[in-house]
View 1 (cartoon, one colour):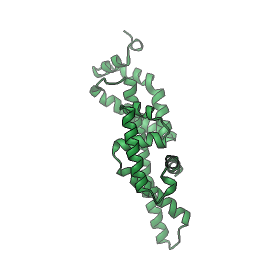
View 2 (cartoon, one colour; view 1 turned 90 degrees about the horizontal axis):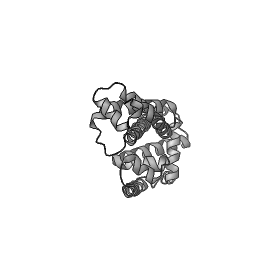
View 3 (cartoon, one colour; view 1 turned 60 degrees about the vertical axis):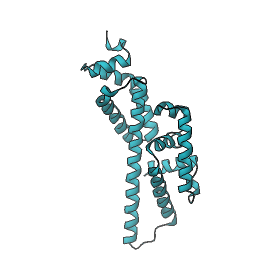
View 4 (cartoon, helix red, strand yellow; view 1 turned 90 degrees about the vertical axis):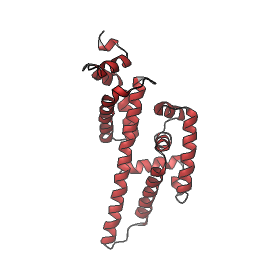
Length: 203
């Protein structure tokens, strides 16, 4: 049977068995959706390309561990989401470091930083720190729903859990962020979490 006539699962099993033609066919079938999701999450082609590459490197390495509890395409989609979110988290971490360096430079130069810059810097640092305090599952959920516009149903499918689980995670995450960021009113709503995302992308 030719590769194009096989199911995704059959191709993945062939890949695990050593068929070097199987995985490229899986990539061909799933690459469009994978690229779309990493680009939507990262919002720039450079990070998207990194996440896209990491998606298929991870899938290639982890193929033997595939449990078959979802479609192969769904499994790869989840890997793509995780890879893209990792890129965003890395970018936020770099931003935090850059903002701290900027503040140090301003102090050393004995120049008074603008009030807007101080507020923006503090806000980014606070939001980044608060997100880092959430559980991994809560981070994924709030990033997908509140920052990247996925519906709760879509997020449930991507993360492989029930929609009710997404609602519960989202409620706890939002409550935690609201408590931590109550002093930053513009950042306590889902709409303004999206503004935080746009701010990190423009750096």
